[in-house]
Length: 510
Image (cartoon, rainbow, N blue to C red; front, side, top):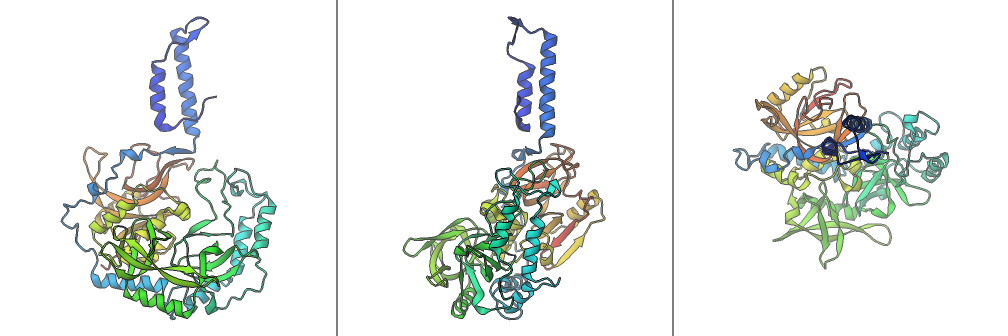
């Protein structure tokens, strides 16, 4: 049986078949006609196999990923601030408000008003009702084949798998939905936030384009060390805790969190007011005596204690024997972190992109990598600009949102090229978000007409009939074309007619 063949290998194999080695046929060479028939048959098998393949690799090597070739040090605006210092300070205050402010205006999980709104959202269902509904929605045994849930072994989950999770969630206990100060907490480790309290993945069939690995439907996001949270309840076995964060509500492993008291919060807030340090490159947090204190990922920030020659001395939380947090000191190299808010210039954008470019796509921050909205969120964090975690809601951080839903693909392209603000315009389409970084000459056209260029973390391109994916699977500099030379059937970011949404989200103050 002929194995499935990668698209990038097919041309090589076909060229070999066109000049085949000697093949014996009853002790003689095959006649020319039979050889032609044999070659034609194999080519047909290859083409059939490729057409039937749900996943292929996009040749991203054909696309220049050298940041300095696009964001050039010779550009006249390379070190120009793209937003005013006054406006940046305003956005930075909003950022701090989302994580650390405890008063009535705070959007932090340490704010009683914020927590109360999350406990009973506007739709009237309380948070435990919603958790029950989530579990029920996933429980699809004997339902639509497209919604059957599979584990990592390609086998569908049986009813007892759901029942075990339901029993452990213990949603009928006497959990209070009133804010309680003692339930304030903080992450003392980097954690996955899960939709249900289990590390078991939940995939839909890998035979459906856009499903299967890596799309674990229970993986929501990551909660980084030092991020505030509010504790709602624990599972029956105490291994998992349902928490409210600044961005999402979900289940985290109990061992990675600690409760905080008023003294801890006041000390943390006091340190935040003195300065915040943002991680811009994955690196280790090292204690004063050389102890490992954790990993700092892009999108993480810490209160600044001291600005040393080669490193920043920052606060990191740790848990005591009673389950409460206390602060310890750790060093973060200056090569991997900056004091917030960093001046928003093309130069500084390029530095952060350079640290991320080529890193694998991480659905829901799986493996502490980044998907599209995690990438944009982490990219703007060092500049003190808060973005929601989900691409669906990142438009809320825009000062202006232009909806081009009814525009044609060509009109969308023309509007973006004419009115996009480079480095400050997010493009939102169904299920995806990306950053516009400017206009450049089309490298795939003889006329070299202007095209929009983007920075994004993308899984891949789908075909028009939605039956396959050409996987990019990483953060990339990528041209926004109406047609891609590799395949006319690839759906452009401009061509979202089936679902309509096409938004430009401006993050600047103009």
